[in-house]
Length: 111
Image (cartoon, rainbow, N blue to C red; front, top):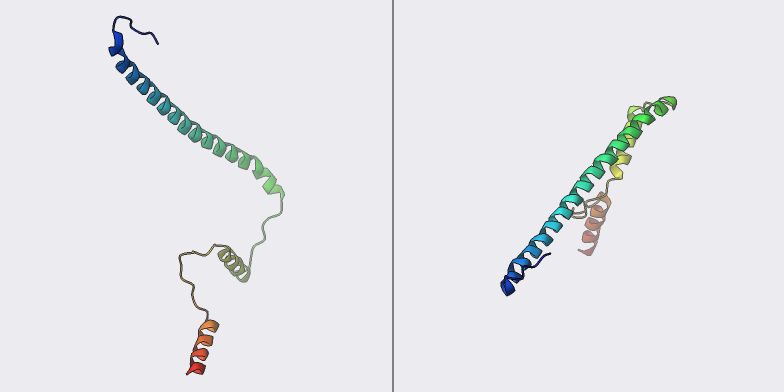
């Protein structure tokens, strides 16, 4: 950066301000570039996945069809799928019928 020789020591303040502004501008430009790259990158990935899915459609047609499930089998699949869900750690445990019956018997025997 060129320095004005005639302005003397008073030019340090504007130069410092310019340096700070340049640094802020660079940071903003980098942040904008990062957001743009992430946004465009995710769009590109999703477009590629859609293209691959479209290309795979003829291969799916060559394979066997999925068998139709009976109502009983469908209920089994639903219960298995529900069992795969992680329990909520904040939820209070529900006492089982066996546990509550045992605690009642224990209370009676202590009396």
